[in-house]
Length: 441
Image (cartoon, rainbow, N blue to C red):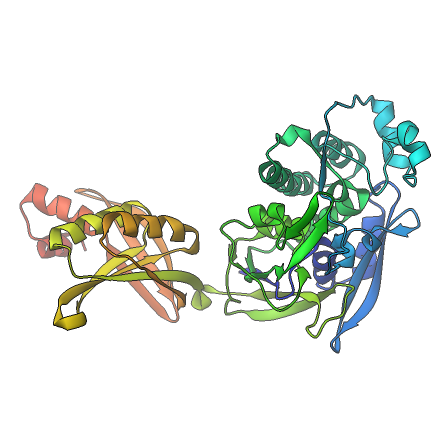
């Protein structure tokens, strides 16, 4: 299986993801030429070598006219301080009507935004341009020559950002008008990443826990905590962490791209690397400011994933009450629930209740444990486990269908028939389970 692993130990931004994925291409310069031939209005991609902490990689610049928008927009400069401009959106109190000619004019005449020209040139593209989702869709579908899947990916990423801004600021998505995220610069970043992912075409994309930074960041609405509200909304159900770096490491665009393309989040799987890419930010830190991507092969014998174990001790619940709680946990999505007799304080006999679940089901399992047990505290442990690949198929017998479960990997193949199906036949035919197995198999 072709697997792409994205290491976000220094966060992620659109330009860094573009640069990292570009290093996986057999002809990076040729792909940059392809990007420049897309027809993104007044945009030029530039690739340059970069070194961070002795590691050689690639930095991608996007010029809108003669200006590298990253000098003012965090997605390319990756600023980490309170002087950082962070205006994601604008809420319009009036609607803009655009004719087809207006839109063509808008997309091809960038200008600087000065006070005397505000009224006359408000609808032109510039680094404070306000674009709605309708405008973005028009540019992507009508102006760029992109495969249908890439168009769909680009719009899906923008939709994630729009919904996050809508939720964070309490306004409908239709009232969100992008500033930085809606510029040609950001369209270029998102389109480039979506095109690269389409070219690489991994079967699985695994993303590490994301370093989001710490501290505060300045935006048009004031000083906000890191991660910014929209970024944090996008990263719901995603493992994230802060650290010693002060400032915003993961941008809304970076978060949306990772959320859209990730098959799952966790540690690097067992894989045979065939390519590595480093996408560099501009700033220098004590840590290499980069996104690293690893392309490799994972096979049936190298399967692993990450699970959570939630556990608690109780000494005041009956066996029937514990059984009831276990049923509710399974109904809520637990992969497994088991109990262990334990000796507690003052030699009181008790029960250790353990729940195995996925990371995305953690909150539901916590709520269920507190609701249906007497515990006042829950321990959570993250486990990486090796698993056999499993498939379930139905086979037709003289007594009806029986589900057959096959598990394989690590040189092992195991076959097991669904107990409920065997038990049904045993009851219907007045046989024992062993007799049913001997007759059928």
